[in-house]
Length: 593
Ligand SMILES: NC(=O)c1ccc[n+]([C@@H]2O[C@H](COP(=O)([O-])OP(=O)(O)OC[C@H]3O[C@@H](n4cnc5c(N)ncnc54)[C@H](OP(=O)(O)O)[C@@H]3O)[C@@H](O)[C@H]2O)c1
Image (cartoon, rainbow, N blue to C red; front, side, top):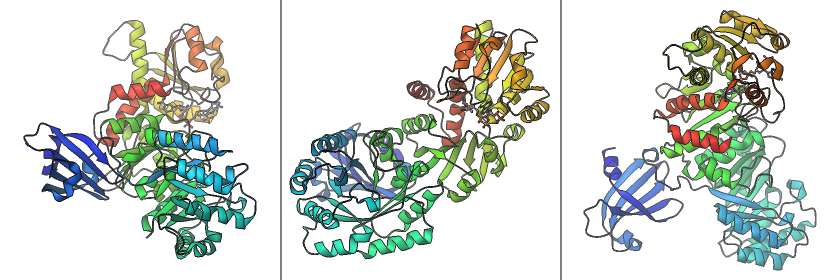
């Protein structure tokens, strides 16, 4: 990798790019007397970097190659460069051709590569006139689909007319045509020798019930290939996140260009990691709520939240494991942070039903690090190969890393570090003290909740010398935790009248008051008057009802975002081995809460 050092000293100005090559002009810090260009060719899983001397880069192929260096793609992060050739296809689903054209233009503006014109959504469709208009006016390559109701679409008219419209689309210059497997042999036969050769035929199969076994999917691919399809498309329904693995298997082994998607919420990762596993394209909707199929992300999310263009075959996969998980801000934070330091990783929301099944299915070395949230922190701990002593004592993990040397799963709990530090800061600021000892020492510290976060806070409080009280809906769990930290247990009802002294500290670690149930609160306002500081682990919303009422009662309040941010710094460093970009992480969190 000595050659890498050489490239680090160059300043690269982008000149032009295509899906798998980039040309940069070497503009400064060089002693060359002629223009020097760097040509980067992505041929996953390797990239080739060549230097060319030329007056105009257009002639670079006939000029002298100074150096040609094969590198692993993970060695170099090219600003703004694409690390995959997976296209983003934007479904166009409007009633009229004018609305469709508006959407098509917007699709280009937001960064789509192809538009899928869904003829079955058009009201009053006049084939020749409308197709001519849409195909000719589109600034992006067009994929024409006319989906019948029997394959999950909107069209329930005459089959002959439907296929005629698709043939017409070919004649009028569409770039791709989608035709359903059931009618594909007959359709492909009917256009044999009659096309210009430009059009690519996508033969598709949709399963709205489930994702079949790997063997069945393999047979399905073979049947589609046998029709003479240029591109195979398989869309199934994910009933579990592990169903996506079979789609990845199809993509990895397919001999022809293939589109593989598992639909529905549990299939989201198949749409994003399509870039890693080499899907020909993925679908991205123009706006949230106007998706043409369940689980479709927006183009904006693909590009800005998941850094879709930077995902490559060797990109390391991370994510937050929970259920539900849609509310999590972690993907915003870690993806932005990964990008800012040029780390070749992605961070996904992972809607997991069974932690064990998830980890057993995604056991490849590229699935490397996870955060854990409700309700999987305890299950996560049970799936670790090795557990750090604090997580062991707490009985829950918040972070899991696959050790690169042997693939073993290491479990940590970093929740308590963030929460306790934030509470101590709040107390110090209110006392105006900078004592080295913990301001929690000797305080009565009431923890509501006895789940993962509750355990973290109770152990953290005990470690700092506080007198711990645990209150929980399920009293037995409060008792169990209280006995482990040498504290007292009580029910939530008892807590309402618990005020042995003033100046107590309260930490809510239940999800009561979390979005969308923001009007709920775990403790009445009346009971809050006895507390000098109130912390809420919830960070969506930032100001919960509990915190608002505590503030009104005169208590210092500490937001859950502080816990989140402190533990995010630690997790980032564990995931990447790099120092956390703290300012950026704070900014992203402010923008997203
Ligand atoms: N700020 C951060 O960085 C951070 C980090 C971790 C967690 N959190 C937040 O902390 C909260 C808990 O997370 P967790 O991982 O500890 O979850 P968990 O392990 O599932 O525990 C959930 C706790 O909430 C209680 N609970 C749930 N619904 C309740 C209800 N309707 N009424 C009363 N109690 C209820 C449960 O009581 P039972 O035992 O009776 O079921 C349990 O004590 C979540 O809001 C999460 O977002 C924040």
